[in-house]
Image (cartoon, rainbow, N blue to C red; front, side):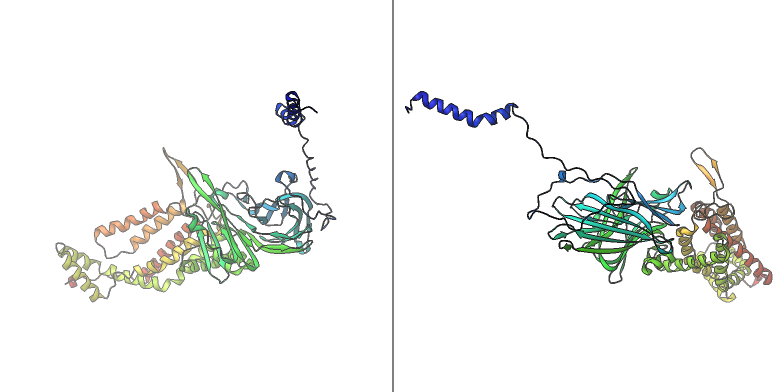
Length: 574
């Protein structure tokens, strides 16, 4: 063949056409688009109370598993919520997520009394009593079992089996069982993972979510006098910790390293959620932030970090937990886990023990008489009888002070220009007459801890919430019977606190003390000042204070009648 110039040009053109036509046609859009791979057909979503058979191990699987992508895994369609209920609560489950989405408390209503209290578990994306893998998305490809069945002694349980796959090619069956009794606020839950693949399954960063709990005002709409929103836990060595949920700095809130705990929980003013297990577990903490107007509100989450789980083909492993979701009542908490009664948070420090004792007495009295209002009156009488020896001695001291009042008045007049000498003469007079000017203060000082402990008891006891007595509709709130509309404010009329103030003023006039005129005026103004600052007190507390003042006046009257005061002649003043 003759390779002249024309021949070489022809060969070059043929090569260009041969190797360049396909790319050029794709560029110009002339060739057909490549056919995409067929999408996996979505799995049929089983309805509640159904079962779909699934083999423990697939019949065949390639030696090298095909790499799955997120698009290749199809999540089952949403299913209707499933309810598990008893006489005290209703648990609402999301079958696809395998978690509790809400807990409805049957015997508690919101502030408006038009709906039951609901502990919403949707603040965190996982929900309560759910198992998930941090950082690894799980895709539910099949709901195998989804039914509620009755148990013995009024118990009921919810059984849920889900087939789960991950983008890494893992394939396993997650079997969950939640069980509750005929009554109460406890839930037993167990989780079993079965490896459906022919290769080992390793699950790291497993989290058992114990749920979250919002602040009480967000749940109920009640007016809050003091915030009470905490995360509590007890470590394996018995140490107790409580952390305020509104800690703005993460370093003050999150425990690093995470401790091993016997139980962990969240509490607000009246309710709590608690997670525990037979063996100590590593604490998991989380929280979400929401804006309430201009304020940041933190909603904490607790749970358990589980150790890495390795399963051979066809192997199964289980974990189990116990859960409490209900009111903060000492007897209920102690029945669930004795040390969880420390979540009551009635008062601070040593006063908390006194507050718990007073609450126990109040509950026992209620069991006897059937009325918390009457129980408060009986408790008031018991406290008055307990302090009777001290108050009787103090009243006797005040009667002596009343007897020497003429002498004191004479000394004030005689030495009004020499305060230092006046004080010296008055101290001398007290020694001669064997009078203690501060004797009347002792019962007040002794009753201050009792008052603060009782305040904490009546303000924090869920037993008193929305319990009526006489005209008071709620012993945990002010006894407002009407409101007077003013230009800028609707003034509530609270009869109990007004009665308390009036009795306090009468009691003060019956117990004169050695004071100069200015001090007397200040003491007379004290009830008015207390009325202003304590006007919105819970009616249970104002009932206690009113009845206590009434008993004090009766005691003073009886003692004054039995031991009338004889004034000391002024001529002995010098």
